[in-house]
Image (cartoon, rainbow, N blue to C red):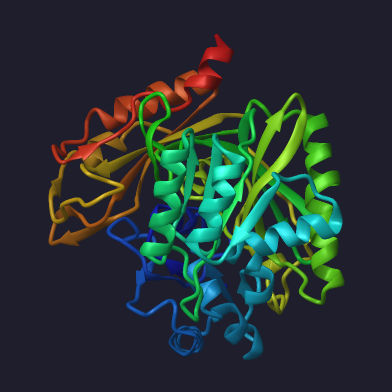
Length: 433
């Protein structure tokens, strides 16, 4: 099977790593990829938000399947162009991806199907949002309605912090839609434990695809600004069979049924960000793609081939691909942890082009993989080229052992310009004893 993988972050390196190990063989092309996928996939330069350019590349390489990694191509209509041309695509249509593209749309869907989520109000200008804030008070969650690369959410503990977040959304046009319109949601702050839960679906069949817990805040102790994610671990100890049954029955199945009812069935991976309080799950938000860095720990735990599972969800389904209900999905009975190394200053301004050394030594231990998120190569040198730069990932029988292996590998990396959190997994490890 010839596969075209779109994206260039740590998630896409992890997907390329998993796809390159599948038993089926074939050509794997990463567009654009990053400094870590060399040797796993052929890299091609293309604007992944240009539907025509992606379609041309898919046809050029004879792609049997296109796998869309990040959310931006979905919002740009890339999946629609591929599907219309008969090129099998793993990734929902733009209409279905509205579950991630617009938080207000997700609230509408939840209201229609009765899925539990936080109460919220949507505003198209700063003044009414600020008026609502003065009545609602804090703590409160302020969200940009549209896509914001995981950084359009502020959990404000004070009214002053919330006011600053509201003004920033409208002043900086955070999450603006294609027409340039900006809106914000003010949402009740949920309490409990966060959980990332994944399913694969072909629009009808639903197959659970693992769980994880991540750390969004930049600094130890869950302090500092929200980021795209500073680390994650899997599986989530919080997820019991009873809780999973409630998530599927109260959130996943009703939402997917409502999408079908509207004539926009959802196909691909659906990532539910949840808050769980006393066994009751509530939806925080949906993502229409694998999480980053959650994909890194999921892929390291996956024991079965990835390509057949993705192909089973594609539209149209590739010739000879099995139905999703017939695809094996198996997991290693081990825990995985990933720790993000980011450039100093992230999620604000940061330097690029700094040399990173010691990567081969760091990845030499069994069960340890270094997934590149923001790197480029100059000859034999690996240079930083982004905010989140590396995902140091380890798999071991116990989570504490995976943590120790990941941090031992990280200690061998020589990059003075990088920083990382030292407490990834701390809540689960406290519970583990």
